[in-house]
Image (cartoon, rainbow, N blue to C red; front, top):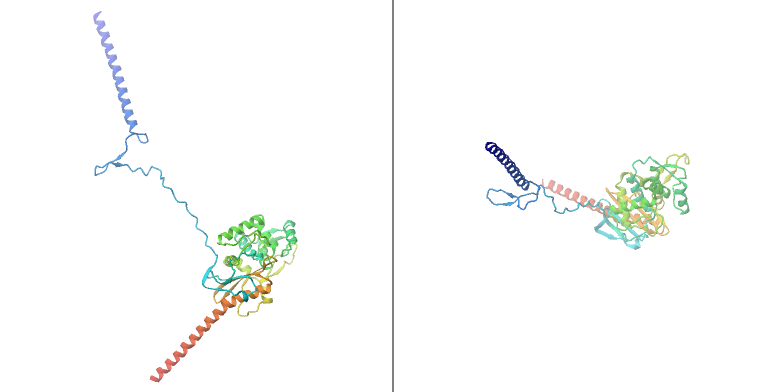
Length: 383
């Protein structure tokens, strides 16, 4: 009995010891996990991380690689487009108002983009059909295929007839090439052509006018706002001689546009309505040939304008003595006055100074030649 009891107690003691060992192992393991967990990356801890350095000085760890950069960044500004608005020349001359019939005018050196002469050039006025210069520019910049066609409708033509607007002569149902409308808008100031161009580019003339105003802003214009593509009178449709000179400069810088405003005569493509096409002539050249008087130069081209409210206007360019000049006159009474005023600007402030400078150079050359001859004579006599 006693031996059996002793054996039983020994076995029970071994079990207790084994159980205690298991509990001890679990306790140690838990402690290890707690320690590991408290030191793991990304868990919160009350201790700051330290960086070991050679001088045994503790410093905060550099965690810039993982911490987000909270420094505010400056917004990237879009570069402003270069303004084509001419600036005042140091040698600017005020035009004597008694010398011209136009109320406003400006003469610009297109190479330096400086105002040479003018009067009232920054005053707001109605641009009338000078508007079509911007229409030409915007259309040329936004239409890739000038051989594509536009079909005219009664909806396009009828309002122009009612407004007594100048027209090329396109008819409802006629399919016309974009190229023909570009020439028609400038040479014979066709409002049917400008309507067709506006609808082709923007779907409506109203939306096209928005595009024109955006382009005016890009050019740096300060006095211009367009309401339509043709220049028909609207009290909110305004510009200035200076702004129109800037538009003319942009036109001259566009190869297609310059070619069109420099053309005297053009024949439109053949259509069912016009089997032989239509032969159209430039109002600018027609007026110059009829009323121009100055034989010393030939105006390169441009655009006329007229409404009762705007009076008569003329924007033109001249290539003379290796340079290009732009003249804009506004608020004259007749086409003849506009031409003569333009010739006065070119002759007085371009041709006459150039001739004077040439004469001075020629006299200087003659003087130098005579001095050289005298020196040669003296040398021979001395010999």
